[in-house]
Amino acid sequence: MCNLYIAPSGARISMKFQVGAPVQPYLPTIAPLKSGPFVSANPVAQVGQWGLIPPHSPTRKPMTEDGRPMSTNNARRERLATAWTFRGPWKRGQRCLVPAESFDEPYWGTGKNIWWRFSRADGDPWALAGIWSEWTDPATGEVELSYALITQSCDAHPLLRAMHRPGPTTEDDKADKRAVVPLEREHWDQWLNGSVAQADQLIQLPSMEVFRHGAADPTKQVEFTL
Image (cartoon, rainbow, N blue to C red; front, side):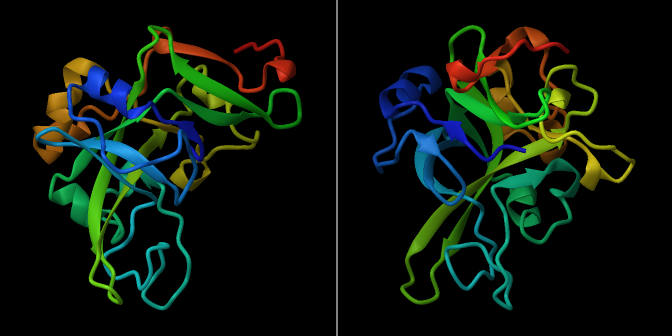
């Protein structure tokens, strides 16, 4: 899964995604529950909370109806159609592209966590698959936008499966390694405007050739072997 990424500037989003720059402010380093940009159908660039707010959450911070906190910045692809938190936006086709200059994952190959950073080899920003939604604040009536990144099992990927804390994996998808879903430019329109079935076909592991990667902190660079 992903819990930290760097968003491009509004000007770079406008240039690379051929949309108007988002007008709302955001900081480049995006963590859960922080504001970040996303591109939805039409297409249009907007800013919302990274952490999808469930329809019956009593607060902007995602919660169950009885007040228990939830983690909704990542949406497991296996449960998009069934999880009450995500099935509404998924079935309504509220899909988006989440621009990212890079994203970080924990590498444990040395026995301790070293944050590993993934950028595109061609220098372009990532377009990560996401879903978005609207939530109305019951106290103020204000409409809030929010979004989640879709994740997939990466147990079969030679690079991405090296991330996260080592441990056994099983047929239970709760135990597998997870990764975000990069979308190539030729698939953007299908993701944003295609049917649910057409969008689901695009949730695939990326090729090794698209990656440039290394320790997020250059002073902690280590020899990396797959």
